[in-house]
Length: 194
Image (cartoon, rainbow, N blue to C red; front, side, top):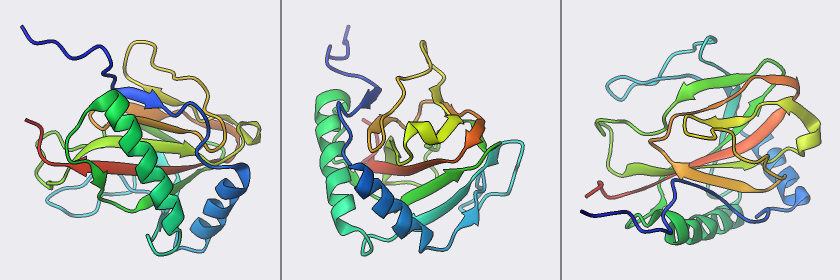
């Protein structure tokens, strides 16, 4: 019988913020310079998804590598460290642009996974998802990131702190009750699972 090593985890967060409050504001400012759009959900045959306000209410924009290259370096370094300490996936790297998300009052994203179960549109295979809280937690109420696992609510993130999790775990952002929740979302991929 083969067991996973004791150090392995499917959800892990950085011990401290990886970005200062000023760096978080710089990311927000850079994201606001990009084209924003209402977020869609789902995709079929490689086509874009649809708007579905029963599933998701948030605006997103994409931050090009050339706009904040140092941000990408810090995130990649953190991901590789967390992967080595907790996940142990092979050949991991940044495969997609960073997505800036804004959840206004009433905004949410219902239960979903970040990876295709049948991997039709991959490789690379999405293996690790990441969220960095850009807002100060005092700026909003609600909007908790939750996982469909035992003890599904992780500790409240600090501003600039990152949480990494297996892209196959169902998760959601609960409804924001007050203020605006701003975060940075990324996905990391590698070769197919063995």
